[in-house]
Each structure stands twice: as structure tokens, then as C-alpha cells.
Length: 397
Image (cartoon, rainbow, N blue to C red; front, side, top):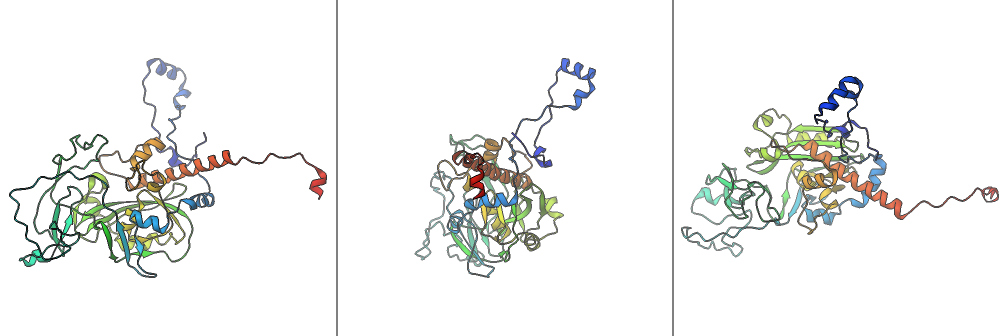
């Protein structure tokens, strides 16, 4: 199999570190052999094709507006506006049964027909306290516990968050500590956190931008985010071109106070944001310098990246949709699992967090792999016509 010789295609190869005494003696007798290391095992970096061919091959995989809406992409609320709406499906993960607390305060109905007692999404029951009356109730995305914040971003009650950071395995155990599903969390954080959105309709959301003129091109994007008092906010971004070149990379200073840097997954540390100089508006201006309204954007769960960037865009290819979960939507396969299975490449393994550059390249290579598979299948199902012998009479006619 032919592999592209672009420098980043060899980035994932590992050196041969096996020790063989006899082989070492042979190498001492033949110094040239030491420079001739065997090639690394193929980790499937798909062969590059021209940008024009790739754009044409990706057109059938562009998400429709209806599909984007179902996946939680931000959509323009009206033409030429900076406002967006987002529809969020309820999380697919199961929730453990919680026993009744005999010491819980007595529930007093608030008089609202839409209030369930637990508190509606984004609202809070009436209270005698002025501070609590101005509070908004959120669901912690880590421990599934409701907590309350004032509209100024202050916690009404400071309550630590006890949670499991790992996924639920096929045998209903937490991958972080192997404890059974529903057990007490193995990690503790100082504060509860929320994503900035709620299940169902969200909007109108302010501050969104979109490209207004065509520029062409194909780019893969990945971002990392941290938790602030306003939810998840952009903290880092990487953009690469279709040939694997790094086009743009930057740290981003959040607009609101940071509650949790989410370092385990984002790789962002306090010292990183301390040296960040660009704001979200700066990053928006930068990327709109090379992204047009016809530019194809590639990513994994790209709706999260576009929401963090506050970017409205209609030409997207999402590897979540390209490689759907065997049990169907809304379940999704992780980028880590797809990369390991299809590319033979380990990503998101570092204990120091994810790399947006590595994740963007993995998403791009997954798309290239799909394109090459489809092109190979097309050649098999539509073979070239058999060439006929040259006939001067036919050719002259």
C-alpha cells in the first residue's frame, strides 16, 4: 500500500527498540545496517487526494439542516442576524435510581403548572430570599445533581461535586474506577458545573458569526473547552488543512470566570490561560479570514466546536454521522474508539488531556479513509469499459 510521504504521516511511527545481542554484533560489523531501521507498522494514514476531488467526494456526506438540527448544531434564527438557536437532545446515558431522602425538606408547590417540583430546566421555584429568587437552577453534567447560581454567576450554595469521570462500559461499570454503575463517585471537585445549554430548545443565543462570501477549501477543526460560570467556553483551537498542514492554533481567554479547567480532558491548565491573549471575538475574526460560506469543515461531534466558537456554518462533515453507532442515534462512537479500530492509532490516551491538533488530524484521516473506501468500491462496481481495437474507419468518421 502506498502512503503519503508528508511529514505528519510519519509522526505516529514508533522506533524499533528490541534488543538482540547477535543482531547487535552484526550491526557492529556492518555500520550501514544501523541506519536502515525497519519501517514502522502501518497505522493507516490514508493517502491524500486533491482538494477538488475531496470536496466532490464529500458532498454526499454534508449534513442537511434537518440532520444538523437533530445533532445539536447552532442554526441561524433569521437571515443576517447574530442570533442562533440550538436544540439539545436529552443525554442518552442511563440515570441511577436514587432513594428517597427522609431528611429532605417538605416540598411546597410554587403555584406554576409547569413546575415539576425538581425545578424546570433553566428556571427556579419562588423563594423568600431575594438572592434565591434571582437564582437559576442547572443540572451538573458530572454528577447529575441540581445546583443553583445567581444570574451574576455566583453559587447560591457551595456544594462539592462527587462524580465518575469515566464512561459506562458494556458490563455497566465505570471505566474510571471499575465500580458498578450507580455507585458513589470516585472523584471530587470543588464546584458543580454545567454545559451552558439545556435539553430542548436553547435560544436566541447572542454573539454568533458566519462567513458571508465563498472562499473554498477544506479544514478539520477541533477545540478544547473549560467550565466557566456561563457553562463550557472555548479555551483552545486547532485548524488543519486537507493536506495535514497546521493552519491555525491558539489559546483563548474565556469571557467568564473559570470554575474548572477540565484538565483531564481539555489539557488546559491555569498557566495556559494565564498567557492566553486572544478572546473569542479575536478567534472568530481570525478564522473567518480563511473560512468562507462554502468551505467544508470536518470534525468529530463538530456541533460542540461550532457552539464553542459561536460559528454558524452549513457545510460540515461529522465523523459521528459518518461512522454511526451500531445501536443508532443518539448514541455515538468516540473518536478514541474510531481511531483505534479504523486507523490503528491511539489518541486521547495522555493523562495530561486531549490535543486539539491530534484530534483534528484523526477526524480528517477518518474522513479520508471513508472517501478512499468509497472510491475503491466504486471502481469495483463500475469497472472501466474494455478498450476496442483501433479502427481507422470509425475514427475517421
